[in-house]
Length: 467
Image (cartoon, rainbow, N blue to C red):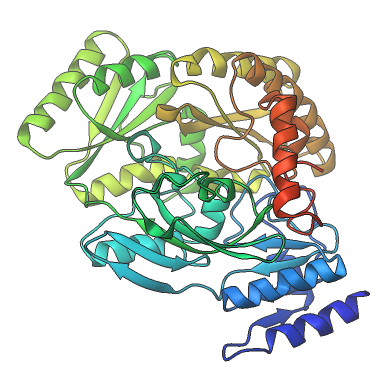
């Protein structure tokens, strides 16, 4: 089928039922929906489809199989691995109009959502009902639940609450064959063979599309308090973490470099937490449920200072101050965005983070001394974000080419440390050439076999994870 025939057929499909979907073909829509936050691959979709129901998604998948048309899922388009980029004439299936919260059970503490529900929308709904959805990240205002689950997003609270998959009670999916599966039926205990939920979570839409998810909710944390510390040395991140974890259950433990904070401060709207400058900073969050917890936190802080690990620090005295301190960490990405950062999202076992980070930093600095390196991340769970900023006088194409060489060095270190080349943004297109640094040949063969079972005609997000 040519492009015109594909578009005409899609429009006919979306006009069926009581709630018609939409088909977009304007250049601006193709550009907007055909990409994510990566800037490496220019989007070239043939059309954008916005379905309203699971049945319309099923009809799209049947159409794709019958006509060998490739489909690319699109959520909030905040990914950093090009998993939602349509670069080769695919049809984008965007879930923006499947954004309803369908059911809520206070006794089960679960909420059933369509895939296009925005993370912040779910968080607000939980709060309105006296509960809490803890999976959180800087893009919560635009990322969608289906995309979060398709990449098993983590974010800033993993140290306490785990990844997205830990909060899924049930899923409704349309497989690559066009079958609708209702997985786990929201049961807490269900030991009846393979749990297929967890194949679709993190699969990046390569096995099928998530259309609904039933998410678990939790109690609302009490008096979340933030402590920002200036660290004397990178290894002190582990000293501080271990010291606090012995007595306090942390809900977050983040870190960022002095260079990262410099960009945030220069960007405006955020003030330095204290006058003392430090090479690295840690942000700790915990529930101050009593005066005793606050006393313990201050005692531990003083202990860290006495040991020479911490140069200075500040603790929030109100919700507003806690939110303001979080801005030091959460505004890093937007503050460096004008510099066209090349991003790597990597992880190792928590105890090996300092040596791992130092090795990578040394290699990149040695070979590209003119590149500015920005480090930050969820160091409490071993996840680091390496950001290399493009020199202003270097063409984007030349910069990306040099960063490909950086990737090789970085991932060789990742492999030696038995880490992951993608901690929370998936493989997509940017990481698929490096999958073997984390996965064995046998594992990749099994991944391909699973793909063949669910998507035999290879119409679901082809070219992502592996070719």
